[in-house]
Image (cartoon, rainbow, N blue to C red; front, side):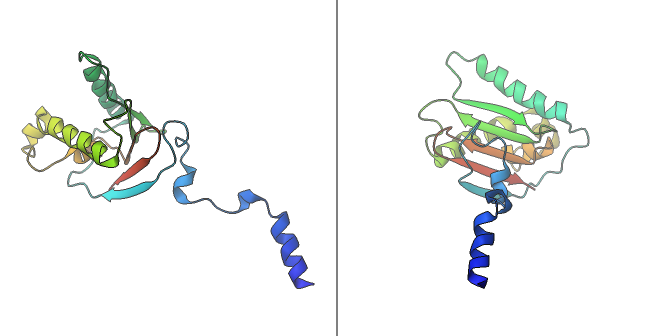
Length: 160
């Protein structure tokens, strides 16, 4: 009898009662990118700036997008901020090549580091040889960056 009772409880337990993995609660997955396939944590060397705000983060992604739109060729990736406080940066490849693998996505992130190091902010702080794009994102108050090819993978970088 106890086995039957256990089976009955199992069969009557709704599927939603079983907690999903932590990253399954990501409401942006399956809309902007496929489910998260890998994760890492980046320990930033830079603190969050005192004036970092939702507006600052949105302004940063708008500036990045506007820079791409001024080029003579179509953008290779989309970059935008999501979350109640725009604390989640999402970067999705728009062509078949630039984000085809996580390694290529890391190459794009390295280019973004080069751009960040050329910025007046990094030069004024004298950190252009130390801080990376991830440090800049953390300074602006981003808590995570998700990169994806928009088809097969999504990689999450937690910024701490």
